[in-house]
Image (cartoon, rainbow, N blue to C red; front, top):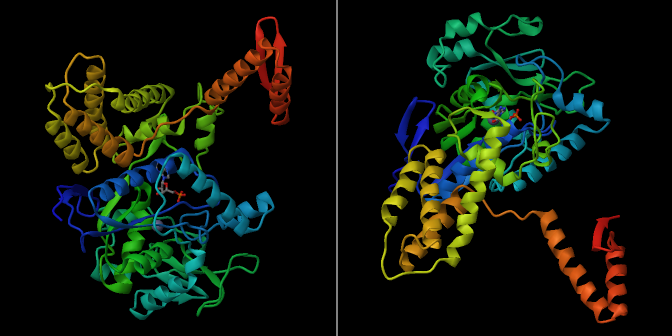
Length: 486
Ligand code: AMP
Ligand code: ZN
């Protein structure tokens, strides 16, 4: 398969022609959410962007094995293997079991992804479901000489690794700067080097989630889960590894080190990173407390919002920025996206109402080529959307009979819109449920009025009582009949 797709590879800092290791198969691993709280809109941006990437690879005909993990253990509050376990802390706060916390926020995450019309991954492995694989990997890293155990905790030996490999290969940072900027910590004395990180952590007695291991009871460090699960399902070397940009410096840097130390190969050929969603220029994050929850956006209940926006308008808002650019949240931008999305989807709805003509005023072939060129250029969705607005302009002009199109033009436009708007961008028509209910009740109220006019009081009463039983109350007055929910 010879695709013209180019991907920006964080590892080489260049756009490279996409050449999968085993075409037409493509292995795609994306770091999933840490399910101790609701996902915020920033997290959603990353997952929606990888949904776009997944969808386009499928559209090109690749057979993609898409793995996105769920982090449900091993996350400490500090970034240096210290602090409270996030799951245990939340469990205490909500008076639930840690696994109830995991279940609650995993279900919530799935609901949100469904609302955003994101395709589910083929495999969604959890950290707690792969403790054995993680222990095996830690054992191998120790055996290969790149990790050491101190008092029930196993650390990765970064200094030893640096003698043979480039530890900062992903971010190109200077090791000296990194050392200078790394704090000394209380627990640091266990570590041989300042940059060493935990592969396995000894559990304190009160720690709820703990497992037996060759080093005593404990739990895995955060980074090892992705190394263990990606190699289990995609092999030691696979095609694409992705996540948000904030993961590159630590989580992904350590993943590469672990996989190299264990398997002696670079785990992924292409590393892809999405840029951040920001609010007034500051990164949206759980810890900063500036995170919008998706439902606050849909209902408009957040105090920074002028009104609610539908999931598809928000998805469109995200798609209007390239995945490697920052995207700043604002009411104005959302308002514009809402209008843009409606224009696009309305034009899609007009396609079956167009009248074909024997002559053609349009050059569809070049438009289709430009759409592919946009996506082949590192998944450039904003340029694709600009091209699709060209298609919208054409569709509206044919509808208004300002230009002519043949039957095959119209079929071609239909395919273009279906391929790119529905399949690749993952947008779909949305029905406004309140509007739909209103229209349905207006229709029923009309039927009832007609029954009353023809003195069929039995039917009119049956409708009123029937609606009553499902919580809808009708009120007759001089102007007619109104309804309300009881
Ligand atoms: P977490 O649940 O914190 O592990 O994050 C899940 C994913 O969301 C990771 O890939 C993060 O890099 C990503 N992420 C976190 N904050 C943002 C943000 N403000 N914008 C875009 N992606 C983000
Ligand atoms: Zn990960």
